[in-house]
Image (cartoon, rainbow over all chains, first blue to last red):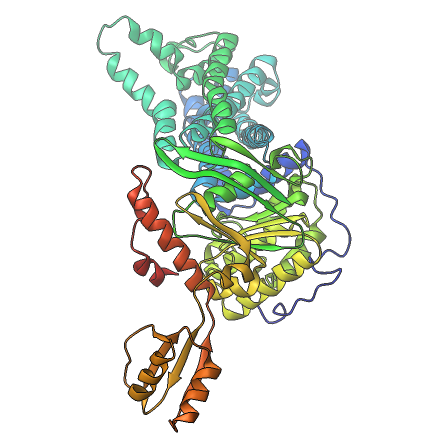
Amino acid sequence: MSTTTAHITPSASLTGAHSPVNGRLSFGGVLRGEWIKLMSLRSMRWSIFLMVALSFGAAAMMASAMKSYMSLSDGAIPLILVQSAAFGTVFTVLIMGVIGVLAMTSEYASGMILSSLTAVPSRTPLFLAKGLAVALLPLIVGAVSVFGGGIIAALITGDGAMTLLFSDTVLVSLLGAVLYLTLAALMSYGIGTMLRSSAAAISLVVVLLFVSTIAMQFLGMTNWEWVPVVTDWIPPTLGQSLETAAVSVPSEFGGAARMEWWPAFTGLVVWALAALIPAGILFKSRDAV
Amino acid sequence: MIEAKDLTKRYGAKTAVEGVSFSLQPGTVTGFLGPNGAGKSTTMRMIMGLDRPTDGSVTVMGKPYAEHRNPLSVAGALLDAKGVHPGRTARSHLRALAATHSISNERVNEVLELTGLESVAHKRVGGFSLGMGQRLGIAAALLGDPQVLVLDEPVNGLDPDGVLWVRNFVRAYAASGRTVLLSSHLMSEMAQTADHVMVLGRGRIIADAPIAELLSAGSQPTVRVDSPDAIRLGELLRAEGARSTQDSRGTELLLEGIAAARVGEIAAQHGIVLHALSTERATLEAAYLALTQGETEYATDAAGVLDASTAEPASDRAATL
C-alpha cells in the first residue's frame, strides 16, 4: 500500500487536488454526513433488518391470536389492526433507543468526535443534524415496520380489514406508534450525548423504556397513591396510550388507554426535550474529549 | 498561520497549559516538542476549537477556527490516529466528513490515492494497523486542501517508508506557502523535518527558536578520539586545555574545549597513532534534554502544579523519546 507514495515533490499536485477544493460548510451537508455515518455501519443494517422482522413477526402472531379470541362483528377489527401493528414496538423501541445512544457515544468511544468537530467546529449544527438523522431513521424504518405490520395483520384478519386499515382511527394509532419510536430515539440520543458513555446511557435508556413498566407493576401491588400517576407518565405507558387512544380497547386487552392521544404525545415530547435541551447545551460548551 | 496569545488551560486545580503565546508563519514547519503531559495535545486541541481555553485566545488564519465558513479548507488536523469508528470503511469515514463541506467524491479518492490507501479504501477501519490509521487520519486532514496542518504524532506507528513520506510531504506542504505544526517524540525525525522548534515543558513554552539556533545554543561540540595510546594522549591534550567529558574507556577519549584539528596536530608531533578522530555536533536530542532537564529542576522547586508524568528524571525520559 505504500509503494507509490514515498516520493512527493513540491508541485501543483502536492495535495492531490486536481481541481480547487471548494468546500463550504452547510447544514444540509452536515445532515448528509450524519446520514452516511449511520448507514455505513454494518451493525445499523442488521438493526434495521431485525427491527422490521420483529415488527412483522409480532404483528402476524398478535393478529392470529386476536382473531381466534374475538368476534369480528363488534367493531373489533380496528383494535386488532392497531394492537398487532404496534405490538412489536414494545421491543423495537429498545433497538431505537440503543441506536439513538450509540449515534453519539460511539463518536466518543472511537475518538471520531475529534474529526467530526474539526469539520463542524461550531458544534450546534452537528448536534441538530445528528438528532435529525436519529429521528429520520425511526420515522422511515418505523413507518415501514408499523404500516407493514398493519398490512400483515389486515391480510390475516380478512373480512374487510384492509379497508379499515386506512380509516382515520387506525392511521392515527399507527402514526402514534411511529412517533413513539421516534421520540424514544431522540430521548435516548439526548441521554447518550449527556453521558457520553455507551454503557451508562444504554442502561438508563433500558430502565426508562422497558424496566420502568415492570417496576411500576410491582409497585402497583402497594396502594400508594402516586404509583398510578407515575405509571401514566413513564415512556412505555405514554407510548401505549399514543398507540391505542384512538380505538376502544376491551378490558381483556388491557382496557382503555390511560390517556388521550395529545396528552400522551405531549408527555413523550417533554421526555425527549428534557434530555435534548441539556444535551445540546452541554455539547456546545464542553471540551471535545 | 496560527497565533496564540496567553493561551491557558486549567482542569480544576491542574494547569495543563499556561500563558502560551506563539506565532506560526506560513511556509514553515514548526516542530512541537515536550515530555508527555507537557500540554502539546491540549494546545493543539485548543487551536482546533475542540477545547475551550480557560484564558487567552488562539486564531487560525486570522480568526478563531470555529468562526470560519469553510473550516476544513482553513485547517486540517490529525489528533487521534484511531479516531475512526472501527465498523466503517476508510472511504465511508472520509465521505461522511467530506459531505459536511459538500466536498466531492473525487476529492475523497484523491486523498485516498495520495496517502496510499486506495487498495484498502473499502475495508473496515477496525482491521487497520496503527500506520494505516495514521494515513487515514492524514487523508482526513487533507480533505479540504487546508492552509494549515496540525499533526499530533503523525509518524507514530508508520513504517520507514511512511516516515519518509510524511517528512517529504510536510516539507513540500510548507514550501508551497502553508503552515505546518507537528509534534513528535522522534528527535532525529524532527531535526530533519522542522524549520522551527517550540519546546513545551509543564505547560509553558521553554524554547521557541529556529532549529539551527537551538542546536548552536546547546553544548559545545565534543571531539571523539580513538588511540591505542589514549592515556598519554589524554595527558598531552589536557595540558593544552581540553577537558575530558567522561572517564577514558580503553582506547577512547571524549573531549571538550579543543578542536579536532588541534588533537591531530598534537598526536602527530608526538608520534601517537590515531584510529579515529571525529567531531560530534550537538544533537536536537541533547539540546532538548538540556532544556527540559533545566525545566524539571526549576519546576520541582516551585510548589504547585506538578504533573507526575513530567516529574520523572530526565534520564528516564530520555528512554521514552
